[in-house]
Image (cartoon, rainbow, N blue to C red; front, side, top):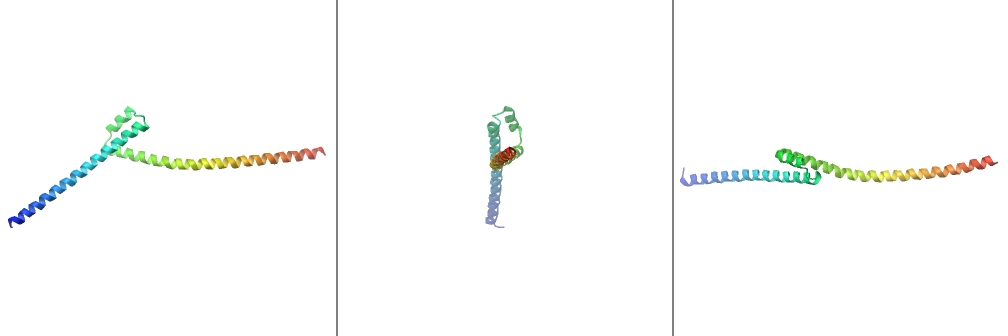
Length: 127
């Protein structure tokens, strides 16, 4: 094998090895950054929603990265559910208001009809 071919193979091998190391380290770096961001989000959640409860903060510090990610997943789902519930709540509020108005109208109609029948009975007994 020629020296130039050996040098070329060594160069490609080195390039491949360095590329693999860079990709591997960048994936690890991205995972680290993601876990730090998740932990910060969890700490912000505790600070905002739980008024900075020290016990909750220490629990966040003791959780693994996977547990923090799972916790944030649950928080996100609950937040989405809360948003859905508020739209359902508005619909329920409107429906309740409509029902109340209909009921009040019926009450008024019955009251009016009762007064009319009462007058008719008085008129009937006067004869």
